[in-house]
Length: 222
Length: 222
DNA sequence: CTTCAACCTGACCATACGGTCAGAAAAAGA
DNA sequence: TCTTTTTCTGACCGTATGGTCAGGTTGAAG
Image (cartoon, rainbow over the protein chains, first blue to last red):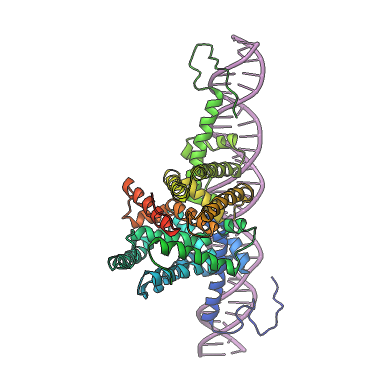
C-alpha cells in the first residue's frame, strides 16, 4: 500500500500526535473495535483475522503483532464488555430501595444494549457456547456479584419494600429483558418495519420494561 | 405430506417396518439432531460437517447425500425450531383472558427452553447474526404472528382485563425471559453451583416469571 | 435369479484459514 | 550523524474445511 499523506503524520495517519504508548493504545483500540463488530456479526468461528484486519484498516500480519492469536484477541473483546456490564452494578448498590435501584439498573442496562449492541452479542454468544474462555469469570466475579445483589434484594424484601420474589430469577429477568434489545436487535428492527428504534421508542421500551417489572415486584414507579 | 407406502413385505416375508422411506427419515432425523447440537455448541462458523457426521455416526460424505450443503442442513435445523416455537402460540389463542393466555404461553415457552435448549440457541444465534437464512420468516410469518397477538392483547386491554402496556414490548419481555433459560443455561447452571436446574427449580422459575409478569400487567394469578 | 435404482463411502481436491518470518521502515536514543 | 529498538508488512506455510466423485453395496421389483 502507498502512503502519500503529508509527511508530518505517521504512515497510516492514525496516530498523528502522541507518544509511542498512546499510538499503541490507539491501534489496539481500533483492532478491538473492529474485532468486536466482526465477532458479533459472524461469531468466533465465522470471524476471520483477515476480515478484522480489513475493518481496522491494517494488514493481517499487523494484528498478530498486537495480539498473539485469534483467541487472545477474542478474550480481550469479551473482557472489555464484561467490565462495562459490571459497571452497571454501581447504580444498584447506591440505591436506597428497589424502585430506585432496580429502576436505575434497568436504565443502565438498556443503555448498554443501545450503546454496545455488538459487545452484548459477543458476550451472549460466548455464554451460549458454554463460556469456553470466560468460565472463570462466571465462577468468580459474576458469582460474587450475583450473590451480593441477591443479598440486597433479600434485605429489601425483609424490609417490606418489595414483593417476595426469588432474587435469582428476578436478576435473570432483568438481564434477559434488557439484553434482548441488543442481542435480538435485528428481530426487533424487522418487526419495527425494518427501522432501528428511534430515541422515543427506546424511551418507551425502557418505560415499558421498568413499568412491568417494578409493578411485578410490588413497587410503585417513581 | 408423505403418501402411504404400500406396506408390501420383502420376498422372504421380513417385516417391512424399516422401509426405504422410513429409513431415510430416520437417518435425516439423526443428522438433524446431531447438527442441532453441533450448531448450538459451536455456532454456524465453528461447526464442521465432520463433527456432525461423527456425532450422527455416519461418514461425512453421507451427510452430503442427504443434505446438499452445510447451509441447507443449517436451514433445516433453524426451520425445525421455528415451527416448535410457533406452535407455542396455540395456547395463547385459545385463552379467554390474559391470566390464562399469557400464563399458558409462559409455561409453553419455558417448556421449550427446557426441552429444546439447543434449538433455542441455534435460533438465537441465527437472529443475533442478522438472520442471514431466515430473514423471510421474520418478515412474513413472525411479523403476522406478532401483529395477531398484539391485537389480542390490545383487546384485553380495551376490555379492562389487564393494564395498558405496549403489546410489542410485553411480547419481547416474554420471549426474552423464557428464552433466557435456554440460551444462557450455561450461565444459570454455573450460578446454580454448576448443576442444571432440578424439576423443582424449573417450576420455581416458571412461577417466578409468571408471578412478576402477570402482576406487572395488573392480572391476578389464577 | 437378474436388473436397477437407491444408498453408502474412502479417497481426493481446491480453497481459505490462522499463524510465521525475514526484513523494510520509522522512531528513539546517542 | 549512526545505532538501536519498535513497528509494520508481503509473502509464505501447514492444516482443516466444505464439497466431489467413482465405484461399491444393498434391497426391492419383475
